[in-house]
Structures are given as C-alpha cells and as structure tokens.
Image (cartoon, rainbow, N blue to C red):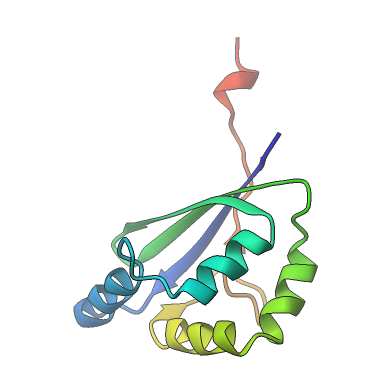
Length: 116
C-alpha cells in the first residue's frame, strides 16, 4: 500500500516568479531527467497545489522509497542540481522550516477513515 507524504513550501511573493514556477511544472514541461529521478526513487504519484504563495506537495510512495537515499542521489545528480538551483530562485521555506530544510513535512491531525 502506498504511503502518503504531504509537504509544504512557499514561493516568493512575486507574480512573475509564480508564473515561471507554474510554467516549469505545466504538463509536459518537466525535464525528462527530473521525472526519471522522481519515479526511480519509488515515488509513484506526486501532485503540487498552490494557494497564494503556499505550495502543498502530495506524494504517494512505494515500499522502496527512502528519503535519505533520494536526497543522496539528488545531491550527486547534475541534472537534479540544475533543477534544484532553478527552483531555489523562486522558492522559500515556510516559517516552520528547520535550518536547511526546504519542503517541510506536514503532520496529519485528522483522518475521516478513523472517525465513526
């Protein structure tokens, strides 16, 4: 059964930067190397939603997904590093982020499935 991850990040408060970010993530716009990196790490599904400057990423991962392994692979992949540098030009950590933390994991506090 896939595991769901919900992550938060902000964009800079600039309409042009937000438009660039959305264009970089439009259908068919993602560089093939980035899609391969994401899928190759065991990420089965990923969606990003935006409200104002706040981004919410929802990921479904398979049993082979390991965030530490993914981070190490990303750090050594020049294509991913180019992408991350481009993203960093318009992204900002949310106020709750720790030192050096980018996407911040949200904590689930409610599930309808657990309710009567």
